[in-house]
Length: 314
Image (cartoon, rainbow, N blue to C red):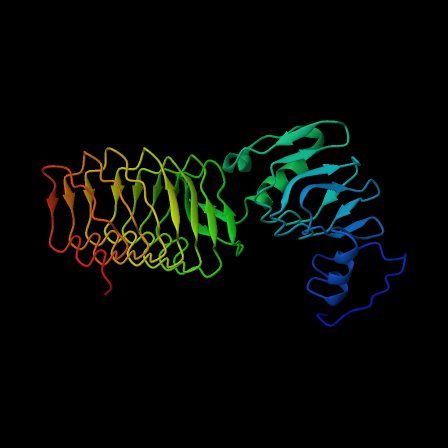
């Protein structure tokens, strides 16, 4: 099927199954002409749509997986009230925020709570499916902690309502390049992003209060994490070997920078130490060769080799 380049579908065909031509050269050719690939009254593929996807009035069936992975889709507008969608039609459309229906009504998605939400009766089936499909990649426990994330999404927007990034969730991930957290996330678990070698930025971590042990250890391309005033606890070795990390905001309220927290963060140039700080652990900033030694508040316990090798080549 991957080599299929030409394809003639007779008018007598009334149904085409999910992903029937997925990955084929024929499908790629169709996408050149239009971001939506249709046959008769069936929509086979619309994953390349950006912004608002408008479903043509003649479409009666959105085939399974038609919009799967459509991370550029922000809203979908239905021009007909006779549209049905098969399973996983909207799978992992994580940026989908709004549906517009033919009668003028609309639905705005709110986050993880949409899984249990009651939608307007007239278009309840479509709304429920779109909500479930778009949240499909987020596996949470009973406390709304993210315990698994599927879908191989490189620029990930975590759903509003998820309260924490659990232990080991993204560990050793090879595709993740950027993640944006909702304001509902207050903690990042141990090893959560350890070994994500292509992760460059963690955005909107403004309400994160705690970062677990080795949470970002070995993230060699990580340049910035957008923490806010809520941060209080950093785990040991949390940013160890984050060699591209340029800046970290440590707000007032932090009492300890633990052992090897920023060990070998070669690109870290400057850091402000809050007045609430009581301890800087062993090798906390060791071999941060670009770092200017910060002003250390009076009374802070500075452990062995906390600043060993800063400003020097190893």
